[in-house]
Image 1 (tube, each protein chain N blue to C red):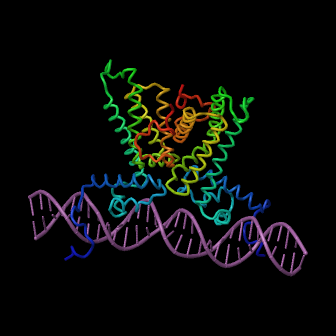
Image 2: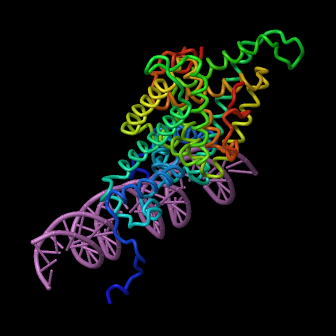
Image 3: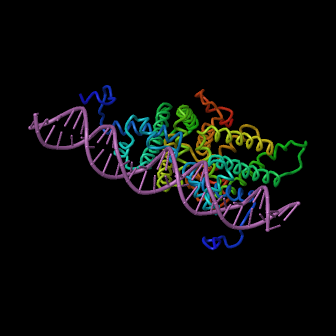
Length: 201
Length: 201
DNA sequence: CGGCCTAGTTAGTGTTCAATCACTAACATG
DNA sequence: CATGTTAGTGATTGAACACTAACTAGGCCG
């Protein structure tokens, strides 16, 4: 009889802590992306993850820790996209670990495309901006710096790009972030990595 | 006797509403830059402006309105810096209103320098990031878009730059914002507009 | 069945915060 | 000095919020 008292979960009731963590993390990225670290309440996240608000604190000690975890997650996603793009454009490497010189541009281009595809989801860009904005917090800043360094290193290794073209690549990316954030371009058409506002030639 | 009850302002007592508004706006930019729209309390701003917290609401109807005013203020500052830089590098114009073709690069370069000088204050960059981050709010977004458009138009008119180099300029700027936000470069040396991390050649 | 661990909840605490209210002090003008 | 206006404050309020504590319920193994 006690089963009929409250609105119950219809079926798939109990999940492992790992699965829940995943769910919460996803919900957190979505909410943080829109409202930022301080503009997002743990209740918003809980609602989206379909759990009670206090249970969040069993999975993540503090709201900030959840935010930090979300940052890691987002950098992971970007890096994964880059790796996938790199593999996709792989050709024979003249010396193992060395990218053929003529391939550099093509690889960067492919990664640019991959990044744009990622950005069409919007969520990721917006969250990135929130992460940068929260960088007055020491913990956030040091994490973002570490991951940013890692990302740059990854791109360097994957493409073999040197400073000038690498910087151009990064700058393009940052401009895209801003443009996407303020919705200057309806990023519907995924193929905008040569678009008027971002493209340079 | 009632006059002796509380700690009184010693001297420089009353200011005009205009002066106060200015003071509050300055304080708001400083605080918002560090903690963002939602991370900043009106009391922080009040303390910095050396007034009581409720008085803020006599000068600005809501906290968000204050934030919006701060956005306007910051774009104003950037535009002023650009204008000054343009005047400074002015030479004879072949046709009135038309910038000499060879001058374009020099002018953009000068503006880049001006922007870097502006960024050394840090406050401005940080606030910019906060403004972008707050763009999920309709009012914020539409304002930022409007001012961004205006700024791009201004740069175009001042330098006569065409799409490719204009975009390069903007992208550089955005990369610099991020780099400055996460403190990758100690922006001490003001002359970094050709620096390794930002420069393209 | 019964003990036991883990998933998950309800209820609550202390605090913070934007915004309002009701009031006082300083100045201006006839 | 009376009257009106503008600058400014202290006290308060009602809501929201991060986080805690204490309890409940589902599943597994003996």
